[in-house]
Picture (tube, rainbow over the protein chains, first blue to last red):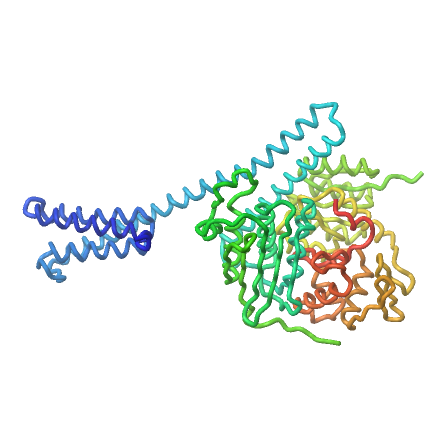
Length: 340
Length: 236
């Protein structure tokens, strides 16, 4: 039955259509054509609230056809003698689309609100650490040097975390805006992964990142800034959920038509459903509330990969989790000059 | 006694200019702050600073215009401070004559390194011999050889030209266009693919680990920098 789940709104609308058709049949003499027409608007309203224009079109069309068949004279045929009824049918669609449009707007606002809540939470976490720690330094006169250094390192870590989050937000906004503003150029993956690793230079985890790149890796036509963001987020995620002190492996393999990038860590396996949903917005594993970060990072990864016509997925390995990114080879390969 | 070097900070955000003044004062510099274009021009004319730190996002006047007008009169090193995602602006200001750039937020010690290195370049410490050196890399431009830890490296002519240009401009940010023009020649400015390929192959020959380069540093969206000297070894 689960395969029907995405279509549940259609089912509800059709069931409603069936019920009102029965009611209409039973009370048709008593209700009058006008009221019956209004009842037939109900399934249209129900589906329109989903905010999906395609669904609205389908249900409205069916609703109009059933109404036409059963009630518009001549009955039990699709012919319409009085053209005034065509006008009613148009009204059905107008109502349907107007409500769909409004519903969409409300949904967009709801998403914005969730985004805002998640973000303010994720920005506030490092901010409170900074506030608390600086207050401590300002007030306490006799802190020993070791503690003082510890406190300062925490402040510094928080600022880097905030910086990374803001960078993500800016890139995400850029992606949302329009696909066309990708700043594509010839990129060298080795160069970009190097820049991404540099971002962790403050975090004392850099030495845990192992990189392996095929020697014949061709250049890629893409947005360098966004690809760095992709690598930073994947590394950040792999590090966050990894068993402490275990290495993070990055393997880049070039094939004739594509480049495969694997980022793997050493950690507990995760549920199949979680693997699928990992890249959805604001998704976070249930038992990881204590790990700093948000569901924004991986969803931006997905957006970046899709913008480059690639694919991203995650799977469990014997001792950890791998994220696999597949990017298609550029249609026209880079020209290179060979000299010996 | 040597007088303190004067730094002009052109920045409208008070939090940042105060932080910079405090820090650079501690490092032994004399500081003047200009909050807008007008006072910046006045301070430039009356004080003649040794270094200019310029915020590109200055209100009431384009920072780039200021770079242009400074360059018509003097060659004082200019370090541009800019927000992230402004690569185009950064490249434009470098082409107009700015010496270096930093994107906000930046580490103050990294800025200090850039200031010192810009000052050294300004003093005109051009290498006079045929030998260019950076740590274990030694290039002999007359003999056309490069050695790493005393071992000769096999470089192609283009790799050699690229490395030579880097070693002649150590610690300096070099835009893609400039590298292509200077190493490949006029007409090659758009051939990024050549630059990417040769940076990759050169790194494999001179770096210990080409995914963690220590010499050829990537300035994302802008260009490359050949990092050399103690200032650039330890990032914070």
